[in-house]
Length: 220
Image (cartoon, rainbow, N blue to C red):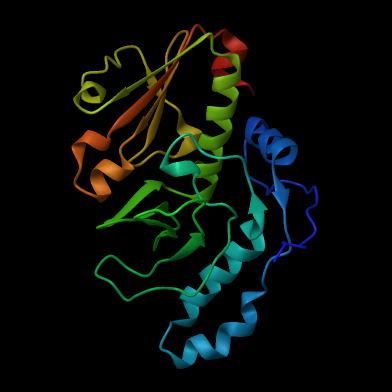
């Protein structure tokens, strides 16, 4: 059955950089999304703590229904950001889904106990400290991919041999397992989520965006 939901332009959530706000508003859409507050009583009856329901509701109100261009890794990331029933308890806390995958994947996208954005693979693996960090990383990848004169991709052991001398971490992406690094004329994105989540070192990947000018390095 065809999807008859109405797509519409919208204002990006507060707290993003100018680059990320432009990315979200120019390239993203928001579709009508569920009001999960109606599930509250049922979830409480199933033993889900009220605080965890509140976290999922807050995420849905801020991010629910936002569809963004595909990420360079993780087969593009969630198709649409959308919360669902919290999952737990676990030794490392409660989590809830962040949105369905674009393609069939061996992991899902989750929001962790401290608001981390990550993947639920063989083990929970937080990629960024927040959903804002994930969105900032998407925006930076889009920006760097447009302005870079060269883009080099490396995998496996070669990632650990990257020379990051003279590079600084990009703070706005709030990198945990995944990180971004800014040098004098290049940006490097390092994706280790699947390598950690599946204990598969060969899945490490880095994208090197070269020959960037000052605008290309920042875009803010």
